Length: 175
Image (cartoon, rainbow, N blue to C red; front, side):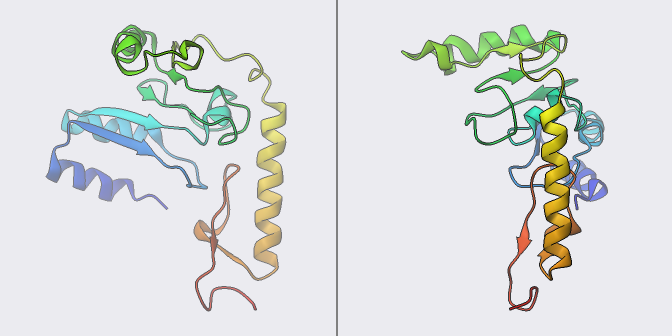
């Protein structure tokens, strides 16, 4: 489980210019507001990497971090029902992100794959209802419970999203 107090102490000590939060394999809810508060306390920019939970964020099944910056998926199989190669942020950051990303960082022959900024008021089509994402989370929680009931240990003791991590170290599961 993330220790936001420890993160805050580390930020005060190191004084970073940017704090990147998020994870590719974190099965619990991430408190992006806590990360933003830590960043504000030390004068850093907060960027949330939500590549694996973008679909859940867009449908309201995970807290958003759109008040600051987000980097959603680059591969369609990563998160459930999420847009490909897009950056979401508030409207104020959108123009700056568009100018920084294209054409400088992503300009090239495959223009249709380039990232675009989406303001808070826009959501990708197909993400509005969240019905299938709700089922994905429900199924993941059921699978996590079944795995634990059958003697497997999950890192963090379960899941709040579609991800889970098995602890396969010796002695932490039945043979």
